[in-house]
Length: 323
Image (cartoon, rainbow, N blue to C red):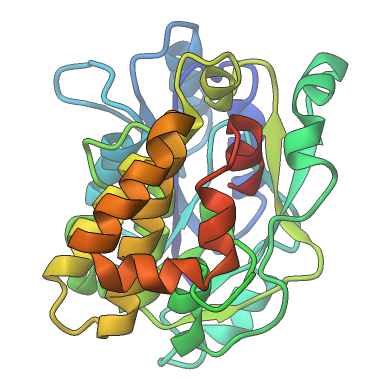
């Protein structure tokens, strides 16, 4: 295997060395691609030192040296990757020694286009743990049981009850299949949830297989400067970002001719539910009545769906915790 590990770097001078070293422990890792996104700290200097120290580490920046966000930054990494397989790693996260154990066996089968596993959590400080423990706890981010590839997409969009989630840190895909089947890669206009939107579409177009689900293969590093802090401090309303995510998925679904009608209705229902959740309490029932007339199929299916009924009355913390 020749794996390209793509690492977007922003404001991560304290953590990126650990991330890189965790990837370089594997002989299967052909290259670690760092894309520095105009960090306000000394991350660029740290990345330069890593590239000088390790032959397998390659450093890139955007052509204008500017800040473009996680989506465009990962895209730049994909454009420069030359390995046969693609893996992702956030600069403040790290791989565990078992990261590619399942992949080495599963990818011997040519029909396996991607593999996903379980993500653990590590708190870099007591302050971070105090602030985010109620969000992440000590739980694995994982799919709850082994599923056939055809069931991964419905599970990701929560179409058939609770399926569980997998993180982009635990995903490995064949590069040629990714390039052939997914266009665009990450949506450049989404500042948050661009990885979730990417995984939704990816699980539709690619046959993804479960790897190690009962123990972590990578770890989410939680600290006070995580991007989620913007949500926690109310600079960004989590309900509004969910609306944008499902609006994007709904737009894609409407234009995907091979998507079954019931799937399109479910996606539209999810979009509607977060729109209603964002509305002031006095307007919620009016919106329900409006959509009952203009979008009867999705609202009718929503009334009989417990997740829909919960979503329209979610508070900000509940929305954040469900991610």
